Length: 53
Image 1 (cartoon, rainbow, N blue to C red):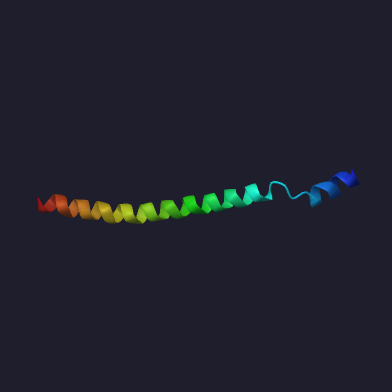
Image 2 (image 1 turned 90 degrees about the vertical axis):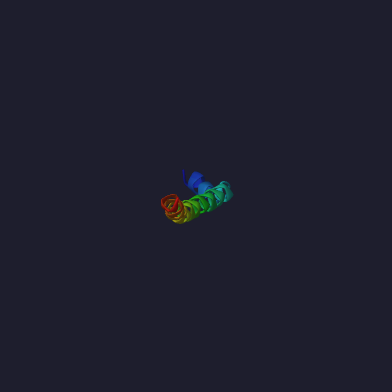
C-alpha cells in the first residue's frame, strides 16, 4: 500500500490536462464577462437607434 501511495505522489501525468482545463475555464469566464459588457452597450445603441427612427 505504501508503494502505491508513493507511486501516486510521484506520478505527474494528467497535470498538463488540468492546466489546460483551467486555462480554458478562465477563457470562458473572460468571454462571458466581455460578451455581457458588450451586449449591454449594443442593446443601448440598438434602443437609441430604434427610438430615433
